[in-house]
Image (cartoon, rainbow, N blue to C red; front, side, top):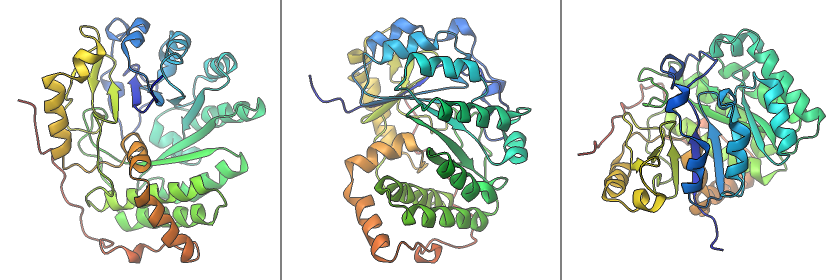
Length: 346
């Protein structure tokens, strides 16, 4: 069997019980009858990694069947969730003990619930994490989308993840068709960048090489906030892909407008992936100027161009595990550059 290389992300639904300030997909939910069915997974290619996301994936009642079918296609599955549906999450983890769970927590209780728009959302999400820890589930963690409202909680949440011995992932505000937002913005860039600087230094001090490379990823988030070109090439649509709830195969979730390569309800994977439409989409990706820095596009790029983050890590380890914002010539209080898509499909 050929080595599995592709990274896939399956958007199961745009239905969501949260009302996040940085994502309006809850205002435009898919109807259950519109969402792709489990049998579509048979058409997917072999993958090294698959992320299941939404909306809120645990709203899909068929999620266990989706996971079961996916394990025939991929080496590893991680589900992104707000952690609200505790019983469903625990039941799924008992049925699939290797499944990864990443719960979105946007700060300590008051901050999280204000951003997520879910009453007792922190209590539910944190409670789900604790139950997963108690049952010794091997692949758990939580993630945070850093913005003005929660940057002061960034290092606090990292320390909480350390206490619970789990993964900690970060992101920042983006605008795209997926989030149904074009007005997400970091107002106090210096404040947010300083929070990332503090986290980077915590990660560099760790004994875990994995966390050293996460420090590089967070450096890239600072670079993105200041409107600079990506630190690594974006090769979405070639090394990775998304499938949206309607069955459209798309390169990513970061563009201003959705750019489908084809639809799995109507075509085979090879027909879509090797189509002239897919070629046009890849040209748009190559010429895209949005410079997104999200884990879905960065993770495969970090592996493919491993020498770039490796040099950065080595440099900062030799510097005594110290990272300073001032080492970046872009660090200032200036307004970030305006990002526009460079291309639209003909």
